Length: 315
Ligand code: UDP
Image 1 (cartoon, rainbow, N blue to C red):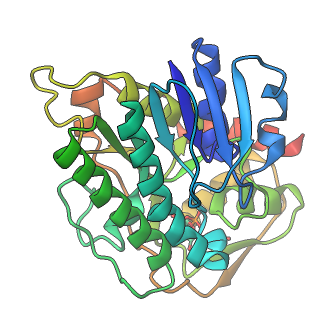
Image 2: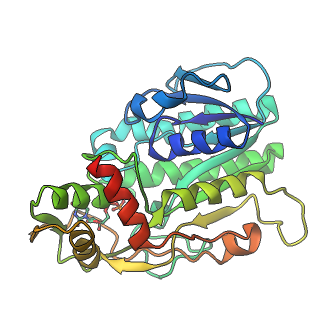
């Protein structure tokens, strides 16, 4: 396949580039480097099957030649980043998604949208199933991300219905691993860096809110399987509808803090900071659909994934 990846220099995007190249595919990576980093793809620049283009996908652009698949991952994704770039985040989900869907339609390329568990907002039911409609504050601080992704899903399914475009919608739950930015504010890189410096870990609220963390290699396998699993196979009729991808093992943030301190053999203590506005109290994916449609489920448990990530941050 010749695959175009928007946001290919980001955390998840760059791992997807690596994976596709290893499978023998050709990869065109588009990124405007607003939150992505050239370091994530420097090792790929000499590969003849890899091409990097510094492109803002919210602007008009064309692309020559055949493309088999478009994976749309471009967006600020950490709360700190999207609070800093709210308009850019809304544009990436709206204008950016529209531009890439149009390109998919012209090229007859399959379109994969990287959506998010944030479409469920602060959920009133747990675990979250794909048919849960969510509890989102449309003018809250997280709305620039949540509503951008909800709009992107609506646009994607409209292209499927109106133009019979082959689409995939991955609702990605918290994912972690090497190449996360140490200062992007997300809880795992923050806790690991604080632990390695023996500084207090900043727990927001009382740390009773939960998350479910998926290791990057598991997520990438899920995304790839979703991309290549064909439509119109009996029992797979819902492959064009959203699919949760995440690790269903749920824990409290306070538990995560203690685990990170123990695994990094740190002398850090805990310090408590106010809970951010609209911070979801629970988050846990129901992955029955992914299991049934894709035969996929995560393999790397939290302890193993954290050890690998700590080792990477140490380096
Ligand atoms: N969090 C925390 N301390 C930090 C950063 C985050 O306690 O230094 C909490 C945050 O309030 C949230 C959870 O960890 O409940 C996950 O936050 P993150 O920013 O990683 O992702 P989110 O799931 O909120 O998008």
